[in-house]
Length: 158
Image (cartoon, rainbow, N blue to C red; front, top):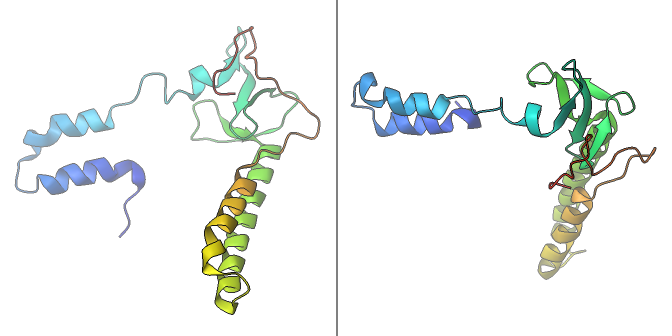
């Protein structure tokens, strides 16, 4: 059975303390599972709200720009503290396509090495090219977005 990444620290702690009473490790488990200040950070650092508490802008994880939610379409995400995805729909589509293309390119590269079309010494260069293409940010078609946070602050992540 596979363990979710988020629970690995707890599992590792419990495995290292199999012969101990729960009370002996409970404080450590509570520390590992404690909620982080700011609800994971998205609600305070990557989202801008108006005076009514409504989300007006989101810092798109893909485009690395502040985008107004009235202009850029964002999908709903129930598990997010804001209720929105962390990438606009245009960014999600571009990111997904790039991941798919990179996987196909890597599979093709393996086949090309197998048939002798690509020499083993050229694999790293080709992999670097694939990764560069996968990591490229494709700008929004409408050029919407700014590196400055609404309210005048400049975003360090941009």
